[in-house]
Amino acid sequence: GTEKIEAIDISCPSIDSVDVDAESFAGMSLLKDSVDVDVESFAGMSQLRMLRLGNVRLGGEYGHLPRTLKWLNWNPRYLDSLPSTLPLENIVVLDLSRSSITQ
Image 1 (tube, rainbow, N blue to C red):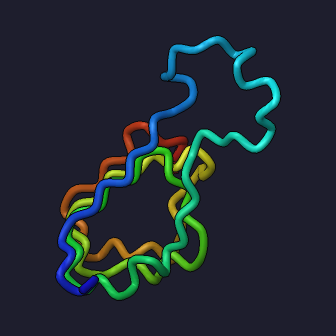
Image 2: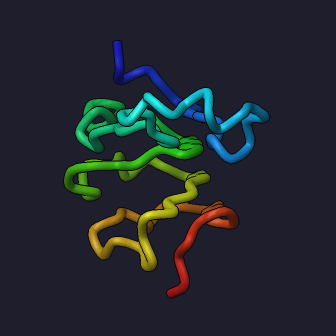
């Protein structure tokens, strides 16, 4: 089950990186450039070590992320600072290079 999962890669290409005519999407008002994921989805993953989130908007309580995480690659363009409840104590690699985080 979920307790055996060690790595997850959820990557959604940005709309900006897709080469299409903008008029093609004119009637698609619900089209988003990110995927919404509830943090509680990771709660039962007691062996999760690596997590890559590309254009993913996390919702919920960040404290539900497993404390076993060692590697986190995340580009939260909707945040300007890291959430204080994000469990960083065991993180060895934290890649926020494409995020909007300034502090």
